[in-house]
Length: 159
Image (cartoon, rainbow, N blue to C red; front, top):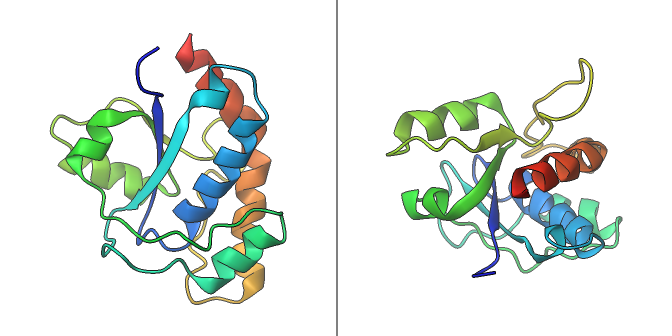
């Protein structure tokens, strides 16, 4: 297999939700058989400024799950990232809409992080930016809830 396939996690500023998504997905992939184990996970923001530190509450929310994302710094989403991605996972419909509007060509592999949950579960993950730690923990828990269905969907796409 050539370079590992890349999963790109996208939010607004790449300092809260998408870094948490990367931490959780990387942790989940590490416990999976191939080919999921070899997937590379990166993140970016629709309106990110390169080099911003991850929010402290994002770090704390994941630290409680045993995952360290303290070294993360933000990156602006680029067309090259979209072109390289095997799958693009967005936190909200507005992120997907912006990617589909500005992508050239518009990628066909853009999904919501919670898109594959069964039933009528909420599909978007609210932005906790500036909120209390509980808001970040809620975002983390919504991502954790989505992991089993997301892993199955990604596994099916790899076949």
